[in-house]
Amino acid sequence: MTGGVAIGSIALPAPQMSDVTVEGIEHAKQTEPELPWDSAAIESDDATAVVRHHYKPTDEGYVATAPINVVFHHPAGVALDDVMSVLEDADWVNHLEEYVRYAWDRNTEEYVRQQATAAETYYGTNGRLHVRCWEFEGVVSMQAHEDTGAYPNHGIASYETAREAIESLYDSVGWNVATAALDLQNEQPPDHDGKATVITPIDTV
Image (tube, rainbow, N blue to C red; front, side, top):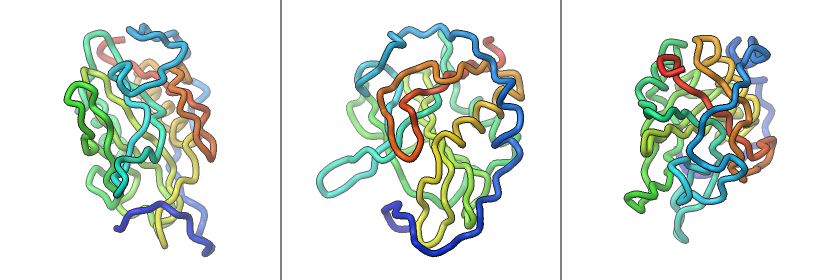
């Protein structure tokens, strides 16, 4: 698959999203998470362990392409494998056709390729929910979005739909969900408000 995420002009069938996309989100817990950062706003990738965007490499350097909108945190740390196991149990695939993206690691001062990824389907021909994740300093940052159809290229149909689906999924297995709890100052069309949901693993709630 080549780079770029332009949305084509041909008509495509509506994406077939799983039930978790819309079911149960009203049950998401709204408790205030305990965060080691000033939750008023995080304005830099170097300010905390939280990633604010993922990036693609270009001839001019790395360019931000999508905002982080879900953060998994607990004072004891969060394991990336535990986060991904919930998606695996929901029958998401973790080997899939996708673009390679990177996130800034402030400790190594380098861009790091996605460390884990998952989607509802391998190709997402008619659209799908899709996430990319990084674990830095015991914090897992997730970029969640709904893809448009795969042809001619994947584009972003929605960030909000995917964020709500992730909230619903982790809430359904008992993880603590605080919606829009962290302001990452990373608003982006078509519908991301700059806020990240903070989720705490079930065994540390």
